[in-house]
Image (cartoon, rainbow, N blue to C red; front, side, top):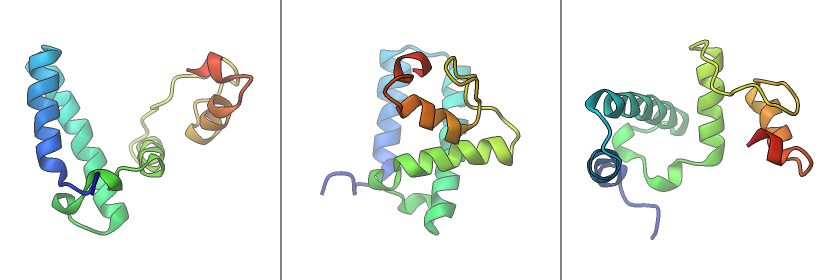
Length: 109
């Protein structure tokens, strides 16, 4: 079934094939991606109550990404959203509402 394969080979391919080979990123940039993805996978595993090695692609849902971004803001005091040009909000919830509205979607993206 699509999406149930382990994340290890997918992530390895992303780092080696895409970030290094295709994009030609420097080692410091690759480490930054690695650290951020590790934080997200730790959050997703805790949210799913499983080990990181048990996560599959289907576990990386929109809701988990938004939950992770909210977690970064509240626990790590990190702002992950730029100010919205339509509503001036940096809150993920408010920004997503504005971003998904038909009238403001072109302004927030």
